[in-house]
Length: 156
Image (cartoon, rainbow, N blue to C red; front, side, top):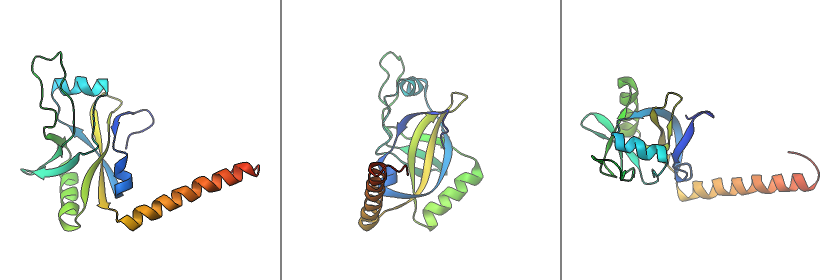
């Protein structure tokens, strides 16, 4: 849910291809100082990341935030990072994950207007192979239609 004024640090572009995103939610992250420094430099990967419930809280798992060399006390690159959500939001998300067999996928990582690191989470269902093919076919047709309209002199 990053707006135009927000700048993405990292995006998970595969998520929209592999999953059907039902809804998105913004969550805060509990980070160490060295992790924030690396985020500001932009060397982060959330392609293999996912959110999972542990000990009654939600954690961002498998997100790769590399080590910050100048720091005296550093962090583990792929450690689990706690996601900060309101209790109602947490209960709603965990209910959807357990009842409807949905997945929480990070869509993007960014700093908001106040400079606080946020993650955009998508409540998603996995796409089947046929769904992916249909989406690709539709995207190709839209692209081809645009070319045809431009070639004929119409703007579409």
